[in-house]
Image 1 (tube, one colour):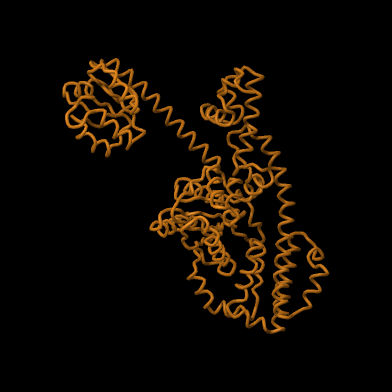
Image 2: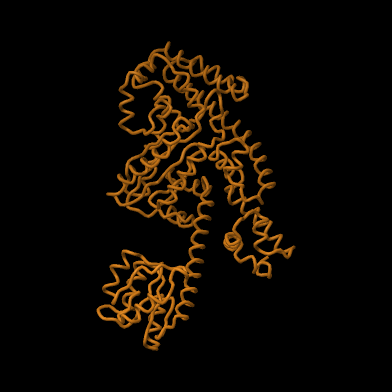
Length: 531
């Protein structure tokens, strides 16, 4: 409280049981100048101030507080019934304008009114936060498409900004970097690496919460196992923010060491959005070395140079590790084929490939492991071993041999993706049936459905949005709103009962979601406001 009359100040402080009405009295001052440092330190929810005071009056104080602490409510007490004062107070954003003398009953009335308003606003903020967290899910399909075009250099700068604005993405910055994160369940004894595990689901949830709370990072999905973080800020901030990003990822991932396989890599800082593709290319190239450096969690350009100088890299020319080939075929991408081939050969690969004998051995080693992998998916070798490939393998010239191996790997990845799509379409049909049967249960979530199907939440999220064209949460919300509209039209149930019937424990949150998605409140909808 700020009041130059000590009698008024002490009277309000001592005669009202502040805690009974939801407040704690934290301090008072005799004028605005004395009050401002206290306000900055305490950041009160409510400021009560007189207008006429020495050194700094109440209106000047209110303007400062409104600018620095926009969420603080302000009530002004004045001994002057002056329209100009009241008008200025309204312009500043003062909640209450009270004329002296202020009775105890009147102050209690104002406190109750302001407490209800603050509780309502806090509730709305919590609902918005919950809604954004749910909507973020494990990916937003439109965000993923935007980022794919951005990293491919397919969007002019103007279109980048326009699209980002439509997606509510704040991409304005002076500098950028890219951090890539690979995550999958550890496969043991032939287990499917994209299966559901509590550890992977828990880790993804923790990472999602961290990135949602940090506006300097924008999280995107690149594929079913890889996330991309765009780091943004001033040029002097990027290095520190990139390090903090990697440090926070490592801290959370290390909790699940032995349960989740993870790798992280970063590109180099760039000064503009149009340079993001080259930054992404570098980060993507570095993280592709996870296939040959499985024990390196944080991959850097320096660590790769060390690997290239190591004896293991040099000896790669004399033998081909079949487990590396299998691992690449399990989680690699067509874009990584050339990089993986170079890694598999090591730094002396070009020299080794000058030998026709080595070329023949190398082709057959990769071919045999690839056939084994294709057959493990239930496909016959005939599906892979085409007449074209049989003819190709007879050519052991160095240039042809490299092309043959590229062809073998890409063909296997193509078969893997084809079989995966068949498998996931079956899973998606099961998922939609499960959602349709359980959407009215408040415990249903992306994790719950993924666990029911025994599939990784990130895989499920990616497949769901790819095939349905909506995220899981968008689809679930749509189902619930359809049911809510039907019940509002056809029954006399109260809105709170309908909320429970369609899967919402909190009727206020149900009303918030209904208004946000349907454009009107449940009451207005029932009254014919929207059909």
